[in-house]
Every structure is written in C-alpha cells, then in structure tokens.
Image 1 (cartoon, rainbow, N blue to C red):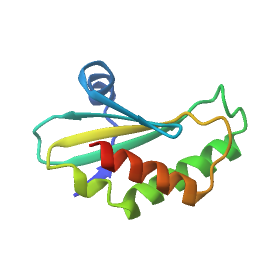
Image 2 (image 1 turned 45 degrees about the vertical axis):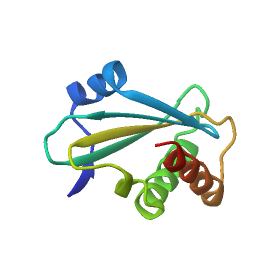
Image 3 (image 1 turned 90 degrees about the vertical axis):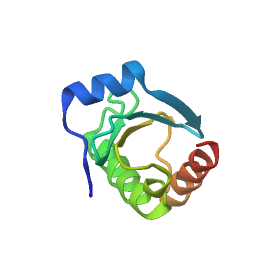
Image 4 (image 1 turned 60 degrees about the vertical axis):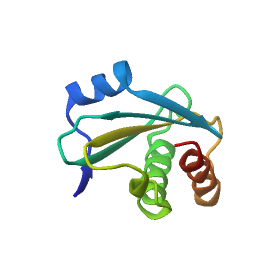
Length: 107
C-alpha cells in the first residue's frame, strides 16, 4: 500500500542516511526501512516559490506524476522516498514526467 510519508523521524533518516539521485530540477532521496510499506513525500522550497498557490500547484503535479509515471514500481517494499523540487520555474506536468523518467533510468 502506498501512503504519504508523514513521520518526522523517517524523513530525517531519509535525508541523513538515504541515497540521492538528481535529474532536471528534481532531487530524489530514498532509504530502505524494511517495514513492508512504500511511502513517499514531496517538497517545494518556500524560498524559490514564496506564493503558496504555486507551491501547492507544483506539489499536486509532482504527486500525480509520481503515481502515474511508474516510479513507485521501481522500489521494493520497505523503501520510502522523498522528491524535492529544485527548478526555478514552474514546470508543466510533461516536463515533470520526463524528469521522473530520468530518475527511473538512474535507479
């Protein structure tokens, strides 16, 4: 079952001990917790996008593209990952999807 990553300790562990992959303004950090669940989270910098409307738009696009692009199928049970949006412009859904496909190739 795929759920949102909400646990603060798990998020800290991902950023401290997890592996990192970068592609087209996207940063993926992942860690294997060996707990049988696949969880993911997304983040958009408030510094890059002060407007909450734009941040939420980007987060909605990221979540939808993660679910539809097949990124979740690349990870086995127990992995949790976090996608950080780092592009300076608001990317379209197609551009985000191509960035996620690039991440998939690097995994």
